[in-house]
Figure 1 (cartoon, rainbow, N blue to C red):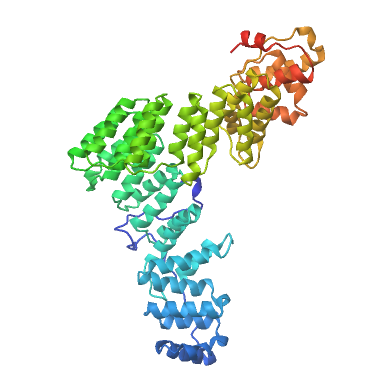
Figure 2 (figure 1 turned 180 degrees about the vertical axis):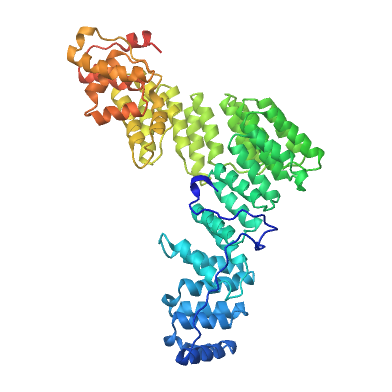
Length: 581
């Protein structure tokens, strides 16, 4: 049903008349679960306990706690199952006195009682406790079986299975939810649309749009009627999958299903168009929205402003901003942050500062994103003192610097060619468990090299490689390649004569170079030599190849080893003049 997510086959395919209506054909029969009738002392105990319960005589009941066992608990629950308040009180009393006596069967009975009486919050709380109390692989199947076998004896309703499915969805236990859905179908039950929505919402929160769409198709086959929330999530799933055409098709077809699009429906599709940079269609949707007497909200305007800022169209973004204010939709922190970031990225720090001042006048407090944008704007212009003053304001506003803050400050020092201070900030950043991005690595290494600080440059590169290979971070080859892009702008010049390298080294280096050529990378012979001399074993070499690291990305380290470790002559000016990038 859901691709690899499902393990349990759904055996029934007949048409369903409605949610939570049990099918009368092609369904597996619900077993008539029974428990033996109490006799002798068991019967006496159950009757006496029942009498104390209906008279709320808990002090007398306390004296009977030593005689409790699962068999007696089940019979007492069955005798009082019509009174859900008394049932839950008794269940909690047992849990307080002897919690170990509760079994899957006793818990199933209380779940039936609460579900039938629509006490879903209490039932879900108990169910979550059951699911979190054990890591047994077969617990989900045993729990479903226990609910199924006690279904008839407790005169239950299909809501109990709906509750089970929804609880799995809330806990993001997708495989268990899928298996439960299939088992429900097999026995003629279907979840409510609200539970289906909960499942889809959890899937989308973990970016599983593919599974959400597959589940929606299964819902259609089962004739589970969607509501506007369902369709909004499906439109969102199509947008997240990059299938804007399908999203638009479903949006246009909502009316034919008897469902009118809401403001959220429009906002989701507008966001989808903005992500695909189809801003004309996004604006047309906003116009259509107003034509249908739906008022654009913060999300509408912020989404459009972000879309135009992302494309560098600040004039259009500003027009949307002004229209927003005219319609009495008060700009919020997200609005200002988006515009400030947009102007700063285009180098218009003056406009960014004006917006910040307007933001404060409007009573909107900035967050760390606001300050980071302003700090980066100042740092790009080399105004590090003004940037430092803004950093001091962070503590006054109870804001904590993050990775972007440090990256901006490092950028500022690099613009001023102050590699020593930039390197100090870098070390502070690492000590605070923040990590630079590829852009920060690149400008820092570049500045260190320009100031002939090869030791610092190599240390930064080593940190970058260590981060790429660290098991605690991300060990995927593709991510490693992304991290290594920081050095990709450094080429390696023909800085040595051929006779400077032994024939043996050249022979081994040629083998390495050929591997790169097979991958379509151009590698200078001397860059290849680095892999043979620097990597200590074949595993290291293989890692570089598997990570798709080009010759360019090791050139800086190679230059360092040629210049310092082996004491060969090296001309940085000559290198820059003959750089082959």
